[in-house]
Length: 124
Image 1 (cartoon, rainbow, N blue to C red):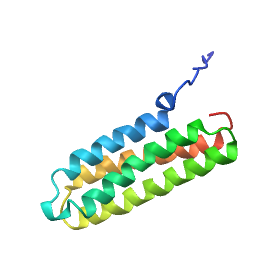
Image 2: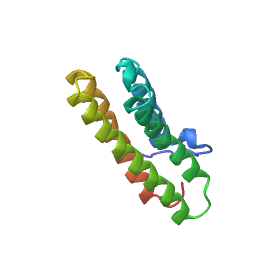
Image 3: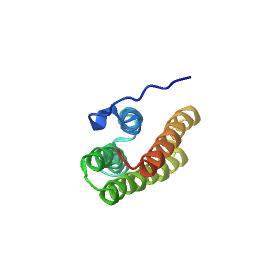
Image 4: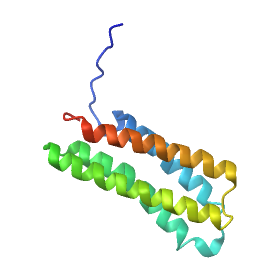
C-alpha cells in the first residue's frame, strides 16, 4: 500500500494540534458546569493550561530549529500534565461524573501520544 505524503502548511494541519483543540473545547464545556466559586480557581487554571497546549504546539511549529520546536512541544506536554492533574482534582471534588472524566482523560492520552510523536519528527 502506497501512503501519500500530506504537506503540512499550518500548525492547524498537525493532528496533535487538532486533537489538542478538541481537548480545549472539551475543557471549556465541562468547566462551564463547575461551581461558581471555582471560576477564578480551577476553571481558570484548567482553561489556561488547555489553551497553552495548543498555543505551544502552534508556536513550536513556527520555530526554525529542532531544538526550539522540541522546547515548545515539551512545554505543551507540561500543560497537558497540568490538565491531567486538574481533572483528577475536579473528579475527586465531584465536579465531573465518571463518564465525563473518562472521556476527557482519554483525550488527554491521545494528545500526549501525538505530542510525543511531534517531538520525534525532525521536520514539523
